[in-house]
Length: 278
View 1 (tube, rainbow, N blue to C red):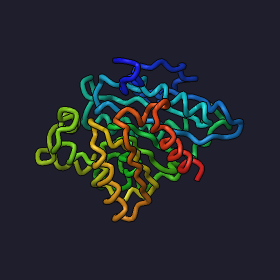
View 2: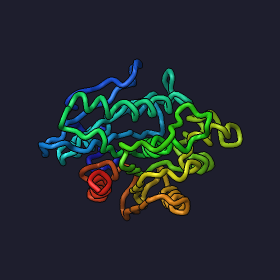
View 3: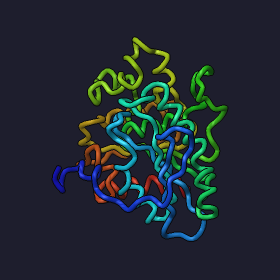
View 4: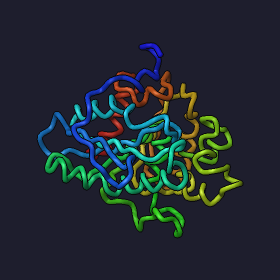
């Protein structure tokens, strides 16, 4: 990996978080928290959901540069961990158990830790790749089938919006295209024909309208998750009545959207600010 390799952001050192909170009893039930460094009043909270095709090889540590940059721009930041495929308790349904629990509990835990430095009633979910899928899914839980254990009666009033960075927002399409060496089938235990109920409960494309503003940022040079997935999701969400925008960035690949040194970063910041302060 060279300095110019876009994957360099995955191993770039970042200052450690200010604290780590525990949102559940398991080892992966943690979130790294950073205080806002450039404001004195209450700051909106960005809840970061890392990517990695839901696999154990990738964890929240690679979002350190992103989280540190956001804290330096006046956001409170919490990067959640969750169980992942390839280790005990990963895959279906545990990932969804963890993300639902984290979204429900972490804002309150951050408010307890940071006090008047954070506004727990002004949360933006920010997810990259598989994390983009999980962030949009978490915001859409009120659209889940009635039997789903994660269903909520309505959108969370604290969630002001979602920013999906190169998100895997159509799991059926991801399965058909075998993205990430069939990562979706690995996550859910089969393709849509084999486990249709799981796709119905896990696929953001099946859970429209979300009911909160969603911004999709995607590079046109993305080789891991084709940008057309974001474009098609945006078109379907608009038809369903959602407030959704999509920003397709020329010359940007899969990892540029999480790199504060990338030309994509101003678009990410603008999307966050519009949702957090709008």
